[in-house]
Every structure is written in C-alpha cells, then in structure tokens.
Length: 623
Picture (cartoon, helix red, strand yellow):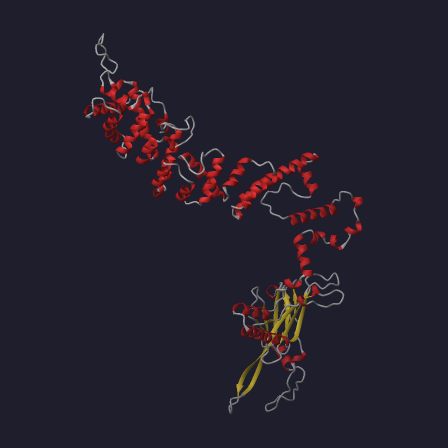
C-alpha cells in the first residue's frame, strides 16, 4: 500500500477503473450547468459529489479537499481547470480550420489526464490509510506547512502536501494523536491555524506538567528542532516536543538531563552527575540492573588496563590484587567484605605456600589464631560468630533455642507463647514450672547403667550413664535421664550442665517390687526391665469372706523406648515357681511362723537389686 500511495504516476497505463472514472468525470462535467468560461470553483462543485461517492469519502468536505489537493499538487502536470477544459473538448489543440483531418481527441487516452486521475486515487488512498478527518484534511490542504515545517526534500514553507512517505507518516501520526484527544482537537487546530500551539495548551491536552512541556520546548529550540519555543508552528514541532516530554517522563528526569546526555560531557565527574540524575528516576531494582550493566564492563576494562601496563595475565593479576576480577555483577559484596576476603586469601596462601619462606615469622604462624585457622578462623562467618559470643554473650541468650532445655521449661514457654503476656499468665506459667521442678527435685535415684560406645582404649569416658529415679510418695512414679560422660572435664572430673538430660517420666505405671528395676542399652535403644509381684487369692473364709489361702505371682516386665519417645507395651516373663518360693522366703522369714492366725515378718525388698546386662554377641538380655 505504501508503494501505491507514493509511486510516480506519469507512465502507468490506465486500468479499467481509471478509464471508467475519467468517463464519469467527463459525463459529470457534461451534465453540469457550467458558465461559459468556467473557473476552478465551478469544476470543484461539479466533480465533488462524484469524487465523494467514487472513493468512499466521509462527505463532500473531504472530496472538495481532495480535489483542491490535486489542483495544487498537479499530478500529470495539470491544474484542475486544465483537466476540466480537456474533458470538455473533443480536441483541445485543434484549430478552427484544420488543414488535414486528424483522429478525434479521446480524453481517456490522454496521458496527462490518466496521470492526474491516478494521483487523485493516490491521495484518496492516503486519506483512508491515515484516517484523517475531513475538517483537518481541509485545513492541511489549505495550509500544508502546519503538518511539517521542514521535511526531506521539502521546502521550509510548503505550498502543497506531497505524496511521499514522510507525508503519510506525519498525516497518520497527527490524525491518530488528535483522535485520542477529542475534547482538545478543535482548540489545538484553532491555535495551530492562528499563531501556533503554546506549551501550556499542549500540556493541558496531554495531561503533563506545564513546566515539563515548556522545558522540553526550550531544549528542542536549542537543538534547532523548534523555531519558537513559545508557539509550536506545526505538527512536526509538536511531535518533537512530545518526544522530549515523554522520554523525560519515562526516564524520570528533566529534559535538561536529556539535553546534557546529547552533549557528551568530557569530564568524568560530569558523567557521574548525569548518571546520578538518571538513577534518581529509577526504582531500587532498576538501579541495580543499570549498575550491573555498566559496572561489569567497567571492571573488565580496568582489569585489562592494569594487566596491559604490568604485562600480566588475568590470573596473575588476580593473584597480585588478592581478588577475582572475573566476578559478575551477581556476586554482591562491600568494600569491607572484599578487604576481609583479600586478607583471608593472603593468610591462607601464606600458611600453605608462602611467597618468601625465609621472610616468614614462624613464631607468629605458630600462635593459637593461626593454629585454628583451617578449623575456625579461615571463614569469616565462624570467626565473627565466635567473637560475638565472646564479647557480647548477652545478645545470644535466647531461651527458645537453648540446648538441653527441659520439658518443664518447654511447657512454660509454650504457655507464654499462646497467651497474652500479663501478670496472671506469667505467674501461672512460672508456678507450673516450679511445680514440675519440685516433682523432679525430690526424685530418688535407685539404679543406673553405663554404656560405653567404644572399646576403652584410653581413660576417656565416651559413653553415657542412664539413671532411673522414683518419687518418694505413694503411688510410686518412675523417671529416667542420661548424662554424657564425654563432656566430663578431664582435670576436675566435673560435668557441665549441658551434659545432663532432663528427667523424663516413664509413662508405664510399673508396679515395681522394691528397687528391682534396671535400664540397659540393647540394639542402640533404651530397654527397661522390672520385677512385679501380684497377689492371687486361692480360697476365702466361710465366716467373713476374707482371703484364707493365697499365693504370689512374680514376673519380669520388659519394655523399650520407641523412636517417637513413647514406650512399648510391656512384655511379661513369668518367674519359675522355684524362684518364687525363694523370693517369698527372703531375709526375715521364719518357717515356724506364718500359720493361721499369725503374722509373718515383712520382707524388706529395698535391700535387693536386679542384675540386667545386654549381650549383643548372643543377641540376648540376661537378668
């Protein structure tokens, strides 16, 4: 379509449509009531209805503007009046008395009329493609300089609209812009036809700040893109000012900053100030992306300059500067962090492979800081954490993350975390903690078991000791805890607080005989065995129903601690009758007593203990 709108029309053969249009124009002039000597206006009135209907224009205003445009553009070298005269005459060059008979004149075959008609069709195609309204087209045809003051191959003061790409683009942009502002279109056109559009009116139409548009017009005038910054004389000047204002708004800067960018300031500080002005209009994330796009190439350029001056390779330069110049912008750091990293690299390189072994002070290297270099101090994070714990321990005392925390403390923290903090909730939680503490503080330790995880090749205790405790009142409740022997001080033998595990209640309700309960570690799991004694009534007295004959059933109970912290159901292992008789006749038993009506002395089972050991090689427990 762009080729059809802008190509030359002088040498194009007539198409059927063009031939029909010429005949229709000839017929329209023949049927019109023209004066004896018609002028251009007469031809306009006669041809306007035909042109409007033929090209599908919006009305006679657009058709009239199209004919005026053709009259001024002279496609085929004809004025509109010359076209009309040729269409009326049979032979415009024949004399009143021809010397010899010639072929009759046919307007359809006239190359100039054909070119004029093609030009008319091109103009109609431009009107449809640009979407320009009839009123705007009429104004621009009469005053073509309002569209563009200076364009390629066009005089500064246009006398007619050219059928060129520049005209099509400008006409389309102008028409589209006016349609987006229907409330300001008439005001803008009126100002444009008068003395020009002032920046204040343009700012009101575009919804931008008046100062921004005025400054954009001033900068455009300094660049010779606008003749008068106070009055924009044509669409080209309006478009340039809009570009300045829109670009400044998009970048979040003033038009002066854009103008400074076009000057290419020679000084580095001027470039830095200009960059700061552009960064001020960006969001933090956009600033980071912009800095990454500029700093990474700058780093490579500086590294290249330094390497070239010292005749070094990139790797050698990195070793000399104690940094990695190939890091991308995604590796974020600070000056202090980079200095720390360089110092760490220097120390590590000195300890592993010193540049000058004879200049190395061994007394310094053998100090405690460098002895722990590989384990702790080579990483800044672990070194700084140790320093913070050393100098500011109060900042790291957090009861919620304290190691070895007891269940009573966990329960108190849970109560405080689930309720609003006030005097009542704190008091209730603390009293609950004291009650739980009192319960375990009065426990009596009754048995224990030591489990060594490794063969005792040294004097160090590497295992754990397991304890069983019970409450002092009835009914008895039983608890267990451990202590980590590996944390025992080698010199004093003292155990730190974090070596002890808190007391945990055995939720089995065991009915233990005396102290006959014992822990053991079997298959890397805590097992618990105890002895129970249950009374079984055989006969009762006929007089009062009281027990007459009875016996006692003795059994071993075995349970183990599951991985989820709960206990398994106890397994029952009955004790043989022969052993039961011995147990019933322990210290204090008299065979001559114990008959009906007499009382046997009580047996004190507190003086006896249970032996329990695991034999992993035999896959057995021995009690």
